[in-house]
Amino acid sequence: MLQLQQQMSLAKSVRHRCNEWIFHDIPSDITIDVAGVTFSLHKFPLVSRSGRIRRLVAEHRDSDISKVELLNLPGGAESFELAAKFCYGINFEITPGNVAQLCCVSDYLEMTEEFSKDNLSSRAEEYLESVVSKNLEMCVEVLQQYENLLPLANDVRAVSRCIDAIASKACSEQIASSFSRLEYSSSGRLHMSKQAVKSDSDWWIEDISVLRVDLYERVITAMKCRGVRPESIAASLMNYAQRELTKKSTLWNPSGQTKVDIISGSNGQEKLVVDTIVSLLPVEKSVVPISFLFGLLRSAVTLDCSVAFQLDLERRIGSQLDIATLDDLLIPSFKNSADTLFDVDTVHRILVNFSQQDDSQDDMEDASVFDSDSPCSPSQCSLFKVSKLVDNYLAEIAPDANLNLSKFMLISDSLPSHARTIHDGLYRAIDIYLKAHQGLSDLDKKKLCKLIDFQKLSQEAGAHAAQNERLPLQCMVQVLYFEQLRLRTALSNSCDDEDYKPSHQSWRISSGAFSAAMSPRDNYASLRRENRELKLELARLRMRLNDLEKEHVCMRRDMQKSSSHKLVSSFSRKFSKMNFFGHSSSRGSSSPSKHSQRTDSKVIQRTCTSAE
Image (cartoon, rainbow, N blue to C red; front, side):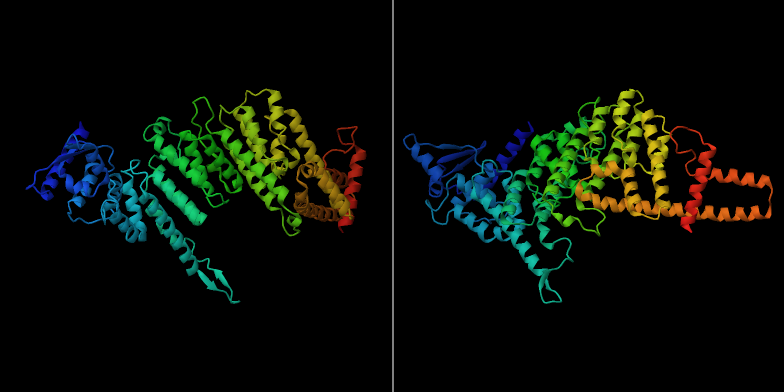
């Protein structure tokens, strides 16, 4: 009903305007019907300019045709009114607002130079060439006019001409901006100034963001072919996505709302925008910020976009996962209410992509990574960052009651064994999972705890694990054994003057599994870190020995002053309490004996003598 009223209003206004310029002293001999709007006109002015109307009249010459219906004319009655004015010689101004209509209607009516000199088609193209193509804003305005004419005007060359003009203008602005940033260095060489963080040549980004997605895609594709910088392309895509996708905040930054908000509205249009932007992303690594990629991935998962585009986003994210944050990885799951709170499967695929690209980079790197001044190689640095990120992610999803053990273990075991230099974060995540899932069987608990290398726990984490009743008994025994072994090797290193061999044995005992699991090119850096940690531990032990020595001197002085047997007995008991092991190291007995106390006293006296 509303559409019918608008059509009637348009027809009335067109007839009123036509009465102002059509001469009435000669009766009309042809009626043109355009989308329900009729024009009472004369054949001669029309056939002298329009090849299409001339052909229609010629085909029906015998029947003396008086009415012609023009179907699917781009722009409708308004466009034909402009063409009819031109045929009657009525002057009007060609502007960026109507040149698109003139190009389309002249192409439809075949108003070319073949039928009349300086016809409408050539006049419109001349305006495009001399005026519109020199100004990017005008080109964008013309393309916006074409949005209402497509797909009827899809074959018109003016659309491609405007797109090429925009791409050419952006490319030339970029080149001019690059030349303006050139400056001479102190040595007389030209180099690019780094002061301009955001290029002034990217002013076109806001202008083209108003285009419809299909025309925007064609513009960006033309810019890529012209050689526009990938950084500028990425900035434009981000701006366009921000403009089109933030209209519904649940799509761009999901906040746990219901799925009803996502399905309602222009779901198909937003899906098309996401697919288009993903297909236009630059191939260069690290050009597109990872937060933007995660935002696109959230939208793609929510809108159920093409699987190929989702996999492409996951591959791009995996290539720079070391700069991601925990909030990036927390992708809500929208499958069904019985599923996990977060999309664990997507995160697992991202981690697989990261591990695969890390392995390929390892094969390509040469021996220059073995730099003695570098604490770790670039690959090991990224692995260490991602391992911390994964441990934090596991701790975040562990309380989820719907998270089954297989998925949790899949994420935990998705990185190489040498990625974690310390297992404190993994132990914390597993402890949270055990606390939230108390119904696990003993077999499942043992299977889960096998992921932890208890030799890689810090002193604080080891002390907590030794008293953690949620862990299987076998794991608690392992923790106690490794802590005892670490203390013994550290003490033996501090008591021996020959540092090289014992320190090497200590490193092998405390982190032998770590060394074997790590890639060979990272062993040297890990050995240096281990040595630094041992040196700090030895320094603390020497300080404790110095304190013991001072106390020993004071006691000897007290003994010389007093020959009381009670004082001697007290001295012996006090000195035995200072035993570092607390128990004898003999395997046959679990309780201290007089012989072990005498042995420990001799060890401490020998240690004090070497310290002096």
